[in-house]
Amino acid sequence: MASEMAEAIRQLINEKGISEDLIVKTVEDALLAAYKKKYGTNENAVVRFKDNYEGVDVYAKKTIVEEVDDPVLEISLEEAQEMADGAEIGDILELPVDPREFDLQSVMLAKQTTRQSLREISRDTQYAEYKSKVGEIIIGYYQREKNGNIFVDLGKIEGIFPKKFQSPRETYHMGDRIKAMIVEVEKGRMGPQIILSRTHAEFVRKILELEVPEIYDKTVDVFKIVREPGYRTKIAVLSHREDIDPVGACVGLKGIRIQAIIRELEGEKVDILKYEVDPKRFIRNALSPAEVRDVHIIDEAKHLALAVVPESQLSVAIGKQGLNVRLANRLCDWNVDVKTEEQFLQMDLSGDYKRAVSELFGEPGEEEGLRLAELPGVEPAWAEALAAAGIEFVEDFIASDPERLKAIEGLDADSLSVLQAIVNDNVEVVEEEAGAEPVAEAEAGEAPVADDDYQCPDCGARVTPDMSKCPKCGVELSFEYEDDQEA
Image (cartoon, rainbow, N blue to C red):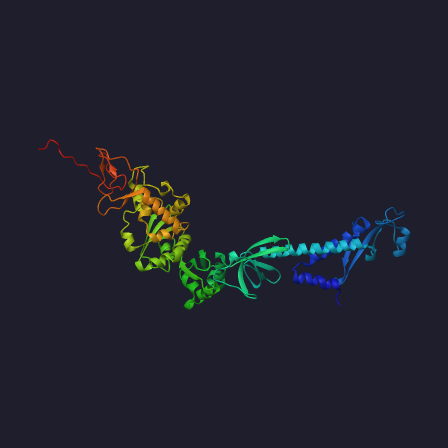
């Protein structure tokens, strides 16, 4: 029958995952520490385990001498010859040490050292094991909950499922099976802390790899995943083989694969679309499930674009609280404005297009218009939020669709109402001529038009006879003079 030591060693190997060599080394160190506590040194001590770890023996190596000066390290010739025939001076004998010779303090020290060392080894082993699994899917069971954080039984160790990493669509109960991704492993006083998540975009990527063989074997690649956990996820995919449709591979026959992914996400909406190098086509795809008629690039350097959709598709393209268009912006890394066909036809001379024309044909350093940030009372945060949405000038704000303004992140309804009042109080909208774009002017006004100055017939900007083009809209100019002397 195996000894208690052998059973304990096997238990440490199987349950704690500690290697056999580490356990043996720990026990050796503890016994050597006890030996040193008793005799003052352990340089001559030897520890040997019996077969199958059924026991352990401690030996003291002593040198044979004529006269003994140090009984710990030396033994007399006469005493040595009684123990071993043929012993001679200078030989070294290994003499067994009776553990009963160790005092109680030495024994307690050995036990304490062993336990502490094994705990540290177990913690380090578990930390290394789970640290290498960061980014992998793991399955555990609901164990307990505290302050919204769920503690998950992972078998050998307990994982933490923070509330912030739980999908708002999901609820859990005692004993529920939880599939989550390891996002972080931290060293703790009682052992490693395993942080789990079901809200990270990488969690969706791992689920895709499990459900779609083409993604697992890299035939189909995931270009990017953006997600609003619990509401909608957009996934851009591309194929390395012309004969494989990346979207079809992810959807599966009769939608079986995509349905499995949606079930795993507890009904969260999932849009799988094809990645395109052409930004226009990519933006069109990213706004799915909306039907997009056309995409116009406003400013390629600033990644500003305009998507034109039918009237019936506007709410679909924008999404609830602007969610669909926000996710499309993040997926494409473009700032996309959505307009209906009618709205698009009415914005021929919008601020964005005016600036684009001005940059092409205008004079260097020409003033583009009155900035929202320059108005008194406008909070910097409001101006930054609007600028991020491509609305930097007063003209842009006045021409923008109210629904677009409501969908801007960082600008709530109250702030928008105050901002509208500031614009109304400080800016006068002037109709230059019938059908022309309203022009915002500060109430302080501009300098009056001089006698030798004229107005552009298209945009009303001030021009002079020496100009061949309007500095604001770029229209060709021609000045004709009537002969004062003509009868």
